[in-house]
Image (cartoon, rainbow, N blue to C red; front, side, top):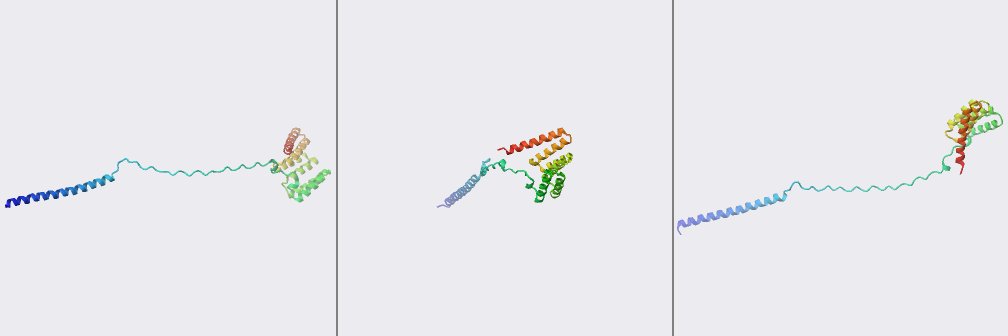
Length: 205
């Protein structure tokens, strides 16, 4: 083989080898490029993208409150009653003095009755039963002005005790009549009659 032919063969072989190497390098580069593109496309996100909705837990049901039964109404007969007699609120000493005063007043000795009641007031100064009876003793002593004043004081202390107020308004009516106050006496009598009717209504079945 001639030397020229040998050089030609070598040149062709070199070109072919270079082409093969270049082709392989291009294939490897293309593979890396495709891998990179795949990774990029795999992680790419479009915008706007729907955000996941916020899940709100349902509120717990409200506790059921059972209605409480209504309190039974208190019968009128079970309501607190006002004291009717001095013995219900008075000490033994005051009760004894009031009995003495009542006996003296019924016996026509109003001054003696007043003395016993004044002693009772020194023991229990806010006992409205004592003040009420003392007003009657002054009325019996022909002192209507003082009788009306003491009966009014008894009413103030009684605070709605209709049993005592009824007696006091009768005393006030008599005292005003004795003082010549006919209109005042009539007003006091009407007040007493109203209290008496209310007591009759309460005691009726």
